[in-house]
Image (tube, rainbow, N blue to C red; front, side, top):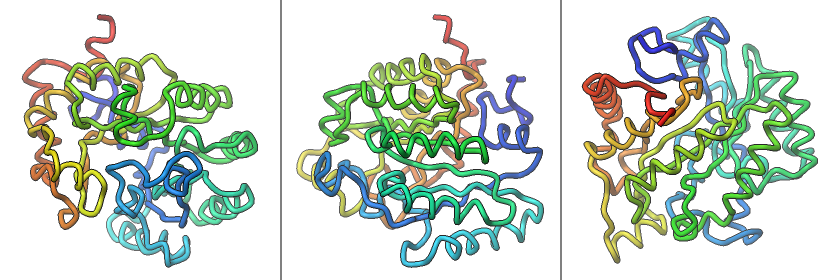
Length: 310
């Protein structure tokens, strides 16, 4: 059996990690704090990343027109019906969640931390959007609660990064990771498979690079082409290759083999809303994708970290 598993999974799942760390079922509750993004308002770029919807990758976050406590409690009440003794992590998901004056950040974060059974925060942001002042505050916050900063990277390849309009460099990303880790703050990195014109080798190179960094977790997504995004317009004008489910499973299994076993796999497939999705049409069948990944690892007699010595 894989070292970090209790159900014959061959990779280090987030559920396993939480249950071992907190001895409890832990739920992340996605929140929309009403932030924007420096890649939208012109600070570093305009229009945002080409795949990003007007919800700022927060399709499952709360309604920004409701206050954060209401957003949180609406989800918590549903979870409590199934798991009465669960613990909770507030997940600031939509847009760039360190992109505001520090007093506003403190007020929003600590509003959630005051709620019952909240054991931590996950804060999704960009590597170019954490000021020194904010970094100092996050360091103090991490001493009081279980704090994770989620950084979007998506790819290490500059040409792709420019194409998708990320508007930050790889050096910026690595410097941010190093600064967070100097302060003992947990880091989870987002990557996207199937970005336009990237090869399998390029996707694996991104994972090999991340494996050398001091990161605690990773989220692996499949590119979603969503309605009313710039990516939709690009795809309709000049269609590019979309990974099949079989190709995606093959790539993910290869990527897992190059990741240290202690890195927690926070996500291993996308989860778009069906009504917003244009391609790929297989992506909403989340559990089918997960099962195919499990089966492929068994077929290979493989597991997370198998190839890191190569």
